[in-house]
Image (cartoon, rainbow over all chains, first blue to last red; front, side, top):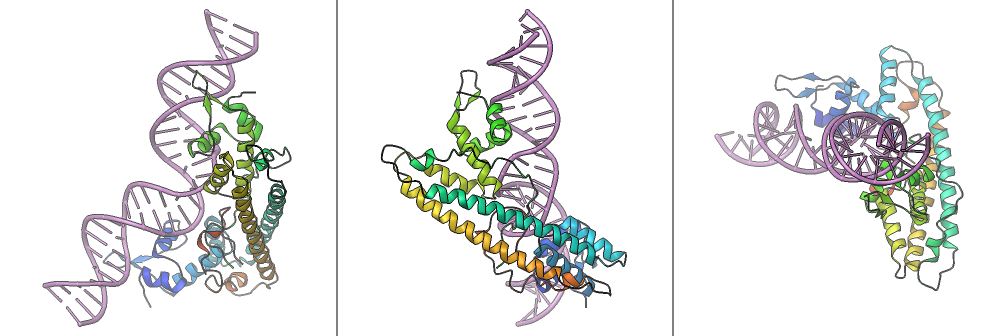
Length: 149
Length: 149
DNA sequence: CTAAAGCCTGACCCCGATGGCAAAGTCAAG
DNA sequence: CTTGACTTTGCCATCGGGGTCAGGCTTTAG
């Protein structure tokens, strides 16, 4: 029934460090054994599993916290999650468009014939005053390291 | 012709601090006026503009540096650059494919009907360990959210 | 000349979501 | 008891800067 942090982490596919991080952010509560070890039950497993699922979908932890708060109120967070998913899809679509734009830019550079005199003909073309320097700031949060399929 | 850091930053839509950061990372060289002020020319503008474009698209600065380093070499970079560009394009294409796949995944989740009892039916459908965690590790760069396919 | 604005270096803290490492305490098995 | 695996806390690092401060220098406009 009770388990320590290592087993919890193993069961949900996380690391003990991540679990401690979730606890520190207040997403999770852990009792303590007399030794000081954190003790978790099945409910903790479910919570952390849900955190991982949300994270897998790209939902940041502060939004996960909102979802968990809704759960605590016995409300059903589905509509909330659904809205988050819609927003996420819009971001993904925007990002795809941006990448296509960048790909066209790279393709143009590729089609530049090699120069013969000193210097690089491609470099000379890196100027296009076209677009590109509008910064969309931090709107897009995609993957960070682990690609998923 | 020559400009100080503020004008450069303004022209490319960056901040002086970011430009100093690029210089510190070796992406950019700046001459110094007798006063100590950094002096930039049109080529610097082009370089920083390209950095911003790449950053906007989620390419990390150390990879931008690889590209720029080759561009800066006046030796005979064209073939090198061309190969690098092909690799970039392949990665961009892969990233686009990943995002499209992720988008389809999100679309499927959107069609999940709302559950009635406690919990979220949508999140219940997600298994982060199923196919997502085969770690592509360093492949995906870009923004901070985690995408999946 | 003065004042404002811009620039210099360097430093420190902040964000997300961990990873890595270290010293020290605990648990379970042989 | 010993060993080794596990856990604790805590600090430093990542990436791409943003924000702010300090103290001092330069440039430019009035």
